[in-house]
Length: 433
Image (cartoon, rainbow, N blue to C red; front, side, top):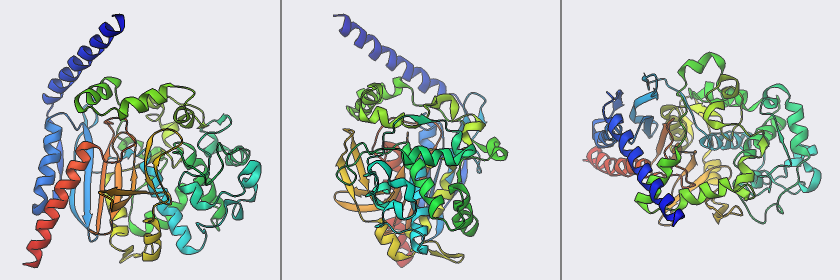
C-alpha cells in the first residue's frame, strides 16, 4: 500500500509541476525572430506556436535546400532566469550531435588519403594496439564496435587541454570490454577521446581536433562550429538546462513511452553497461553545473562538447546533401558521401538499449526501411542531418533539453521535419509550373 501511495503522490506532484511550469511559461513575452521563404511559413508557424505553448524554451531551427537557406529562425531564451533572449548568433552545446560533425571530419581525412576506414587504428597509432586492440579498424571505432565504451578508470577532463600525452597513454592501456567487431554498444563518452586522438595522430601536422575542423572545414566553407568553446565567445553561449525528472515522468505517462524511464533506470543502476559507459573516460562531472562553466566548456571533446547553432549545422549538412561541392571547393566527394550512407550496426546493443543505425561515425536515419539521411542526434533533442535524396540540410539546436531517449527524432522535431517535407513538395511543384 505504501508503494501505491508513493506512486500516486509522485504522479500528482509531477502533474501539478507541469501545469505550474506551463502556465508561468505562457506569461512570458517570448522573443522570436529569423527569416524564411514564404512557401515554408507553416514550418515557422509550428515552431513559433511551440514557444507560445511552453514546449520550446530556447532553440534555433534551420533548413537548407540545394545549398540555400529556406528556414532560419530562433526564439525563446538563452537563460530563462535572467530573461536573456536567444539571438541570431547564439551558440549552444550540441552533446552527441558533436559526434556527427567529427565523423564528417574523419571523412574529409579519408577523402584526402590521410585515413582509411578499413585499416587498423594501429597503422596510424601503433601504441593503440596494446591489450587486445590491434584488430580494431577505423570504421569499428567509428561505429561503436570497438568494445571501448567502458574504461578501466578515468582521467581528469582537463588533461585533454593540458596533458594530451597522458590522455594517449591512458587510452593505449585500455582493454576492450568485448571482442571488437562482434557486437556494439554506444560509446557515449569515449568516442571523442579515441577519435580525436586518432585524428591528431593521422594528421600530417598533428593538429588537435578543434584546430583541424577550423582549418579544414570552418574557415574554408564559412561554418561556425567549436569543439570546445573559446573563452572569448562564452558570452554567446546559451545556458544549458537539464531535463527534470518530473518532465521525463510526465511525458512517459502521457505518451505511454517507457523508453525514457528504461534509460533512466539503467543510468541509475551502477552495474549496467550504459551507466558504466557514461561515467567512463573522463572523471564524472555534474552536467548541470560543469558544462555551464567556461573552464569545462572550452575543452575539446567531440563526444559531447561541440558548440554551434542550427544555421551553421544546416549549412554544413546542406553541403553534404547537395553533393559535397560549393563555390569554395569540395568538402566531400560523392564517393565518400555514399560510403557514409552505408549502415554498419543496428538493433539492440550490448547495453540493452535500442540504438540507432550507425554508419561510420554518423547515424543512418531510416523510416519504413527507407533511408532519409545521415547525421547525428544529441542528448535532449539536438539533431543535424543531410538528406541527399531531397538535397536538404536540417538542424535543430536547443539548450533546454526535452527528454532522455536514444531515438534521434523527438516528437516536436519530427513534426518540424514532416511539415517541411510537405511544404517542399508543394514548393518544387510550384517551381516546375
